[in-house]
Length: 74
Image 1 (cartoon, one colour):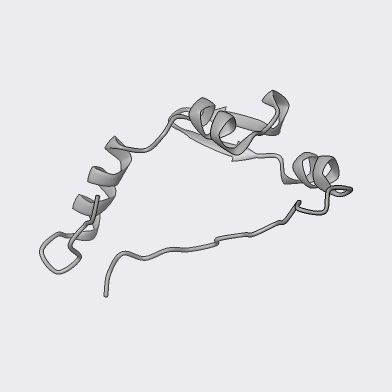
Image 2 (cartoon, rainbow, N blue to C red):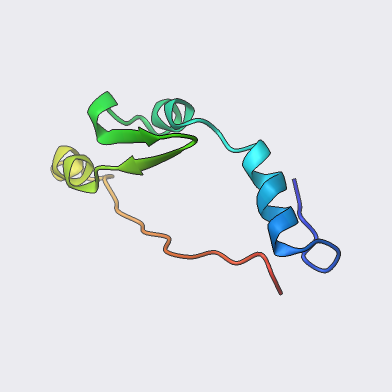
């Protein structure tokens, strides 16, 4: 779903996006993570990057990409 940053306030975009946000369990299944690699914190989750990287270090397609900030405003 596209959010119009010109017509919507930041908090409205955030509120609308959170309604469609997958649960930590859905993310875990979609990303192929082990149960102990994701720590649910309410509707959000913390990833144990060290465990994930150690598990994937010998795989040729194991990559680490970190997204630190995304802003919806133009």
